[in-house]
Image 1: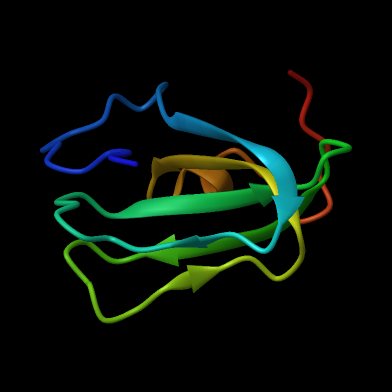
Image 2 (image 1 turned 90 degrees about the horizontal axis):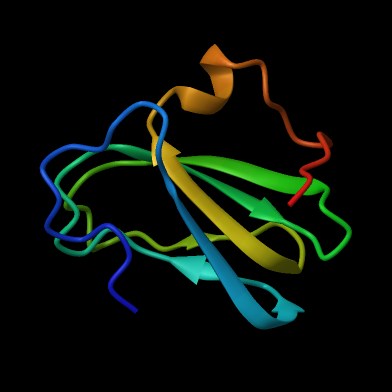
Length: 93
């Protein structure tokens, strides 16, 4: 899965949504990812179960969801905070 690797910028109103086949603990890393990102782990019912900040090019750390997630949303670092989105918020698709 390539995700946002090798990008040098991400427009403020864009991100990447990952949809998995089943809900489970998800794990991401920042290999070859040049921009700082925030990641939201979202349960099958649309509830955000975890939000984490991810540092660019840090291959030493894995970002693991605090609870099972069916969806994962990556956006620019600080986006969730700027928009008042917190753990427990509901996402509609």
